[in-house]
Length: 239
Image (tube, helix red, strand yellow):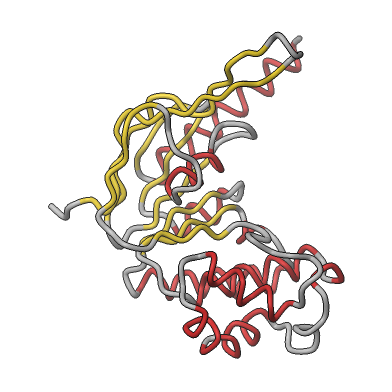
């Protein structure tokens, strides 16, 4: 059996939330999360708002440090692709591409060599030297996705970006991801699009209230997730 590239064991994260100067409570973002990521697979992550999906990606990327459990990584470079990661609205799209690539762990020279490819994939040739504050959210997401797609990573963490932008770019992004999968890229994909998770994932992890509800093949997990949502919606209608 292939050795996992990342292993999480009983990982948890909680933090203080202040109600007043004298009062605070603890909020649990993740609790007792354990699973492996196998080299070359795409692991989909699904769950409702506030279920811990983005927190999980930030822990995997090393941005957050868990205060329970531990993580073992057997790779050098894990990249988080999230909307406008490290972007400065006052800088041009070109400068932001360079900045984002460096923040993802690459050398500036490496990013500079890939700039033409990044710009072309993002379809931003006509606006790449304009300030980022003039970009739409779709343009920003295309730029961020293109940077992370072009740079080399052992594990690529994607937070909702494939769901943003016009339908043409979403199809283009999915096609590019399929090419990545064919090259044995390891991916952790957070998405609200169940269709994307079905099409791209080898396994799906369902997070609910910061805990692992189910982990398995996409058909089984996503069917259970849909039933859960339907039952909850029906229950809310009754009340």
